[in-house]
Image (cartoon, rainbow, N blue to C red; front, side):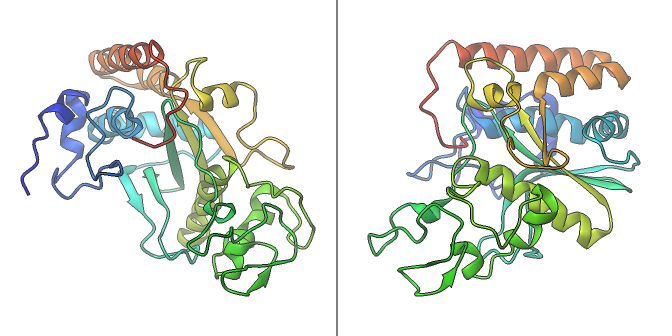
Amino acid sequence: MILDFTAVRKNLFPASHAAISDWLTFPWHRDRTNRIQAHKAHSSQAIAIDVFGTLKMSTDRDRVLDAIARRVGVAAGGPWSISLEWTDTDRLLGEPRPTQVDALAVGSKAVLVIECKFTEPGGKCSQTAASSSGKPQCNGSYINQVNPSSGVRSRCTLAGKGIRYWEYIPKVFALDPVADYMPCPFAGDAYQWMRNAVLAAAIGEHRNLEAAAVAAFADHPSFPTARKAKRDMIDAGFGGQAAITPISYQEIIDIARHVGLDQELWTDLSAWVSQKIARASSRSFESVVTTG
C-alpha cells in the first residue's frame, strides 16, 4: 500500500524530516481505523518529532542534550544519540508488548526516557477495565487479590503475569512492595509515568548509565499534562527524589536557543511550536485521550 505523506510532512517542522529514515516503516501512531494521525494539528507524535527530530539532526545536539541532562539531574556527556519511537527490544521489564517511548536520548554517561504529551493526559492501566471475560483483572487496589481471568493471586495483576514493574517501583518511588495501597498509586494516569520511570531505571541499570524519565509537554493552561506539571502532580505523593521530571517544549527550545549555535533554527522552531500550541488551544481538545 502506497501512502500519501504530503499532509504529514506539512505538519512536521522541515528540519525534522530527515530524522525519519523510512517513512513507510516508521511506527506512526494510528487511530482505530489504522489511519496515520500525524497530519492532525493536535498530534502529540508530530510535535514530538518537531522538537526531538530537529534536535536529532542538529549540529547543536550534544550541547542541547548536555544542558537538558543537567536540567533533569543526570550527568552530561556526549556524544548523544536520539531514537524516535524507541522500543525496548531487550524486554527489560518482562512485558509481552514492550513499552514504546516517544524519544530515547543516550549519551556517554546518561540516558533520558522521554514521554511526549500535547493535548492529551497520561495513559491508564488497562487491568481495571473489563477483559474479554467481561470482568476486570484488577480491582484497582494494590492488595492481595485473585485475577478472575487467570486465577493467579498477586498484589498487582501485572506482576502476576511476570511483568517487573514492582521490582523497580520501590527504588524509583520509595513505595513498599509488601504494603497495601488502596487505591493503587498507579491506577490512573500515573500509570504511564510510572512505566517510563521504571523503564528508565531498568535501562540505566542494564547499560550502567545514569537515567532519568522526562515528561515533555506543551505548556498551555488548557492541556491536562501541563496543568499537572504546574501543580507538581505528575508523580505527586511519592517519597524521595521526583521520579519523572516535567519539562515543556518551550523550555527545551529556550535551552537550545541559550546554548546552541544555530540561532535561526531554534528561533524558527520556537515560532512553529508556538503556532501549533495556539491552534490546538483555540479548540476544545479536552476529550482527546489518544496519543495521536
